[in-house]
Length: 256
Image (tube, rainbow, N blue to C red):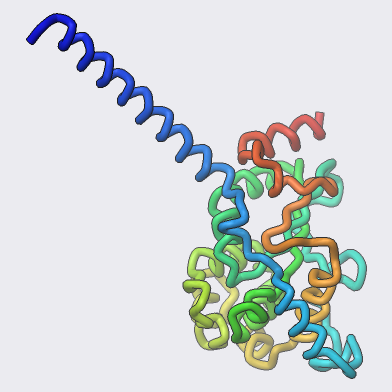
């Protein structure tokens, strides 16, 4: 083989190696960002119409019984479940649906950072629950899981149960969370949560009307889908440059 041919093959191998490294970097970036319309649980027009039709002629606060907010809920109409110290200088607002795959992707990518910042008193997180997958895919798993999470908040176990629900999220078309028995079974993964009081709350749908009201606040808000993640009012989920490391830096800078 001539020296020219050997040089050509070596150059081709080097180009291939460079392209492979670039592809690895792109893949890593995609995993870190967890951003894009292809993974966002979009609030479709049909879902909005369905919500309006379902609630036509009903009193907002009584369509599913009296509105019972979970213990410690705050904000307008007590729709936010707070985690962290009120003295934290940054507030992260997260609109989520427990059946939403994009919400799970966000949680798996960011929650360790969020938990760390919350433990340090640097970040206060407000969780707000939506049920758009029930409207888009059919079923009631989003609503029942949200009620169960509110029941966990009553027991002071919301953060842990919230994470368990995402760790055990069924495929989007599978309405497994509609089974209250499954929701109670998952409570067994959280120390001290699976109590008669929690079971009764889940089975009776104690917070169903609160969940309905929370979802209405989402559907009538200026949101395109779940998750919607706001850091001090800024939508960071739509920021393609956002990563867990950048979120951490922004919060730490605010706390200096």
